[in-house]
Image 1 (tube, rainbow, N blue to C red):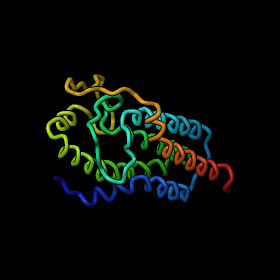
Image 2: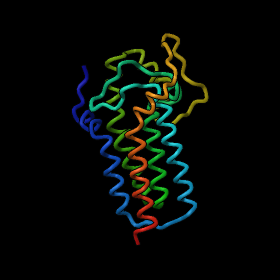
Image 3: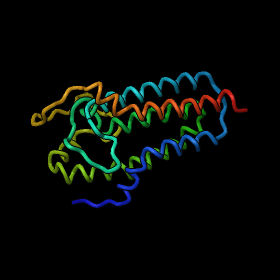
Length: 194
């Protein structure tokens, strides 16, 4: 069985990273811009909607340890292997666009370092050890983070589950609360802090 203590530890703290980032982003100098505010709001809604869609296919994903009762290769997982993290990235771009371009750059570097270099490889190591060749074939055919193919992945041996709105809601209520809290903090800084 695989061992990645550092990756596992970062995985356990991945949600805390959002709060830390929000506090740091609010320290950056900023300048208000209506176009960036509107564009950032669009990104926030799109990122949360994408997370909601992805969450509707994987029950009980909010855990402190890396795990997977089954390999999900349908829904948004047909196009990318990490749609929840893509949703996080899109939401983070929304907040940082609201605050300004230097924040966008800092966020992108921090996010990609945390997820692409540490968290995703730890998860993939687990999935490979649990699902073996089935996962390796999926990983070979589906990009990790950015959807690059027009044709969705098909696995004839997999029993596809349908989207479950209650599973999505139960999984995403925390993310939605964090999204609202951080958005309120960003708006507070933009409009009330001089």
